[in-house]
Amino acid sequence: MPETSPVSELPTIRIGGFDTVSVSRAALAERMVEDCRAARTAGSSWAPKLVFSSNGQGIALAGQDAAFMETMENADVIHADGMPVVLASRLTRRRLPDRIATTDFFHDAALAASREGLRFFFLGASEEQNAAAVARVREMYPDLDVVGRHHGYFGPEDTADVLEEILASKADVVWVALGKPRQEHWCVEVRDQLPGVGWLKTCGGLYAFLAGDAPRAPRWMQAVGLEWLYRTLDDPKRLIWRYATTNPYAFYRIARHTDWRRPRRARHDEL
Ligand code: UDP
Image 1 (cartoon, rainbow, N blue to C red):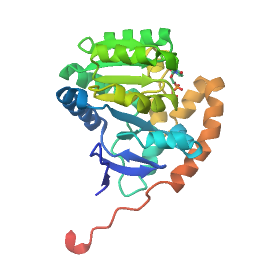
Image 2: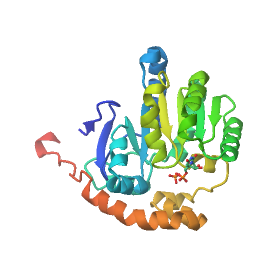
Image 3: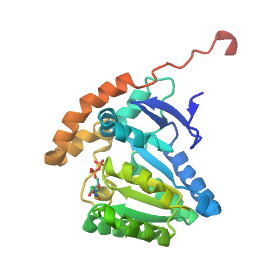
């Protein structure tokens, strides 16, 4: 059996240095619902679960930046956002059942939240992109309770106001799009000041996709782990340097920091 992460109690497998949860997208959405229910019951004694994701950029960054690695170790859940992480898992003793790209998971989460009456708050991105993304979400999920939104270009002096807004909204899930590594550091920093919030979920470029500012790669490119290439061709100025520098190092880290033990062969008498 895989190890169990002590806080999330979800099975994990170590890939590229991160203990990555081995669950389906649907199971993760279910866990969100359970945690948010528990948060409502616990009230002020509940600190939000930190739900982060793993991709090549993050794996590479954690190897270069000890503070980012330490921040990632505070996560309750790290899920496989990048296809290379999922492909690597297929060579280990426990293949991940799903890639959980945040851009896909958002829709599982929104459906579950609409059904269960959970409240979403959207933090991050420019004011314009945040507003456009939230408008689109309202259109797509008319039953979803969107209780607030705030752009992501605020300084430390404004953090208290942003936190007050989130608390007043009674959000169950706060989607945090402040870019890596700011969004992860921010979640760890404010966690204890947001009692009763169920989840802080980092979501990077999600609002660009929701607002229609960035197209998703064709499905075949997603399936073979080339979504990064599609994004680079779409926005080369911003992404070519990012992927050229992070990809080779991320592959090295996946090779070095993954639990490669193969599944144990069942003995004849166990068959
Ligand atoms: N962002 C922000 N505040 C900042 C830095 C970034 O709100 O101080 C937003 C940015 O506008 C973008 C998101 O964070 O919407 C990060 O997107 P990126 O494409 O870098 O994420 P990824 O590629 O990791 O999904």
